[in-house]
Length: 405
Image (cartoon, rainbow, N blue to C red; front, side):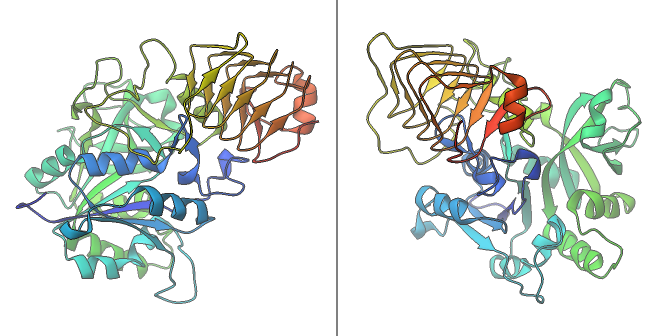
């Protein structure tokens, strides 16, 4: 924000993503491909850059090579203006240890804060699918005078056990407590059927964050987690506010996709988020040119449909060749569907080849998986469970380059 308060963006991108296995077997969760040509981290970075926050440190740790490469090839901002997106690996600046939690990741990276000397620090997660203007949240934070503002999304109370839940005071804005995946949380003031789920996005006044991180580091019983430790600490001292995500308006959005946010932390949520993309009036619209999601496009020729190949209710990326039949699916760059093959309700990542006469249903195939002619995936549940990873909802997932029998 030129001429206004200085802001440093910090993106937490060090998580292992165990629940997304096998997609995270060889890459960090924020580097997992999504929606054809994107990576999960492209969504948070696009939101920050579109919102005018253009000095961004991405804190990495586990299996970060593909993430680092993606940041280097895609997120190169203009150097003359001082803008940057830079990966910051765990550096053990405070001793021979890796990050102990999200708060510790920021604490071990406070040298970045000292170098930049911002007025405010925006700390966002790296692995959610959504559009949000962070500038609106920043302004709400400044106007409230809070030490920290956390973004909250309203979800049904019965879903609270899957989230960090923000309980508010009677004004509906001041955070009274932060509960980690509670079984029976109180509802919102005026709406007892819903709760505020934390989106993992925070705006801090710099001094408040630095002081809180120091106190947390000195606490031997802390888990060193932003939601589990820092937020309760600041809520207890009356310094925390919640920002209602429903108040955020993004240029080009429709009523249908307003307020869309998905934590794609499991195979089923990852699969369902892809299904949200492909309807005639998508629940999440990748085609909003007023708030684009940026990435590095593959240097490939256009998709080609030959010998009667068809795709309906699907997204087909550059470099794909479709000779078979594709429905309700997302094909990433370079996918080949051979003659007579059938792909239904599936997500195929880069370089997948489905052989002649093969059938793939309700599946996620990671990069470079080759389905031999006549093979089936998602047709025989018992056999699939013996050979592959199958989610709770029956989605079959294959790892990068995994052999298909």
